[in-house]
Length: 112
Length: 112
Image 1 (cartoon, rainbow over the protein chains, first blue to last red):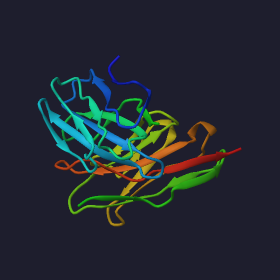
Image 2 (cartoon, rainbow over the protein chains, first blue to last red):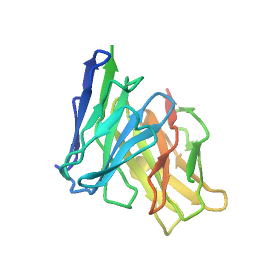
Image 3 (cartoon, one colour):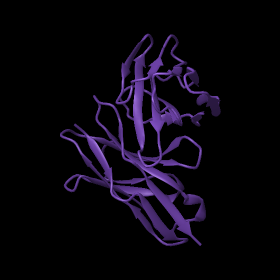
Image 4 (cartoon, each protein chain N blue to C red):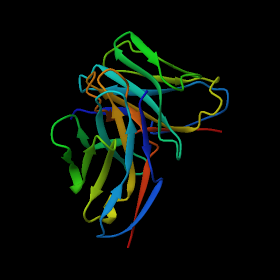
């Protein structure tokens, strides 16, 4: 079945450690996105990529990094520079310019 | 710049009663409009979308929304809610050339 797979679903890390969240899609979508969700704040865009080997910062990119070496994969690294990394992270993909996003199940990161 | 306002952060409704979740947007160009639903600890899934054509859009699970250009609104409605409709609902807007913008969400609480 086609879809988006995020892993891990739950992740605990100590302060100061980098963490990488995986996102893989088999929908043949060109565009991929990472969002951060905090209670009452909706979805905030971290990074997005519309083509392999190219990506752009979203509204809250500081403390995060991404890569897009393959069309299917868009991993997100939460670095130690991110001041408040505990959150629910959502990956999404779309055909470019349709606006309709397909989401993964999310990854909940807790920094202790 | 585009923006989306969801006027209610929480809406309590009795089971089998009708519900309306309100969404207003601002944009200087033609828009595409979406409603997404998020069940606890899951990703978002598309309920319905307006791209063009008829202003009354029907979606999954008995939901519908009406695009009102003069009032810049895209309110979501359901004539009779069920306990399984308990979730958070997000309105979103985009045009062809810009990234999608999400509202902050409305939590729908179904009362027995």
